[in-house]
Image (cartoon, rainbow, N blue to C red; front, side, top):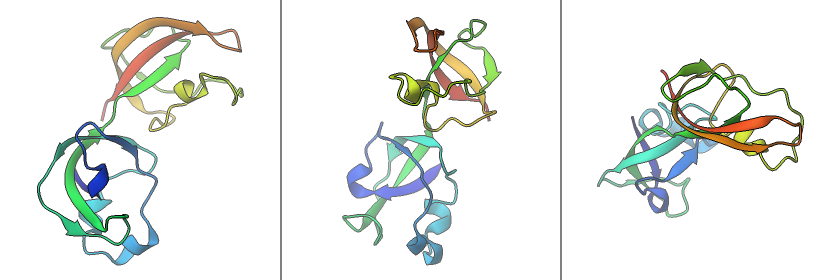
Length: 145
């Protein structure tokens, strides 16, 4: 999908989490092509940068560039033992309240929401044991849309 992003951020491979549109976007003629296709809280990766530029008062350089984005791959730690490369599953957040755990961001990764349908792109196997005593496996996920 195509969106617009600040000129200084428009680099192939760049990842970002869409946090929502700014109030100034409400009356912008580019709103539908800029933020209209993005879902709040999702992580995206820029896969191609286009040549065109547009003015935008939201970004520091006041210029945006069209980019092609796709949902980013998501790293995840899980204690599930029945997940293998190529398998699909529904993500359910772990029952954990250890917010200071060093693995928290990998167990509750940005861009992944409860009940998302995922595909395991890579299974890196055993990671480490966490503070709760779970033996964790490290996965790289894609989305089933």
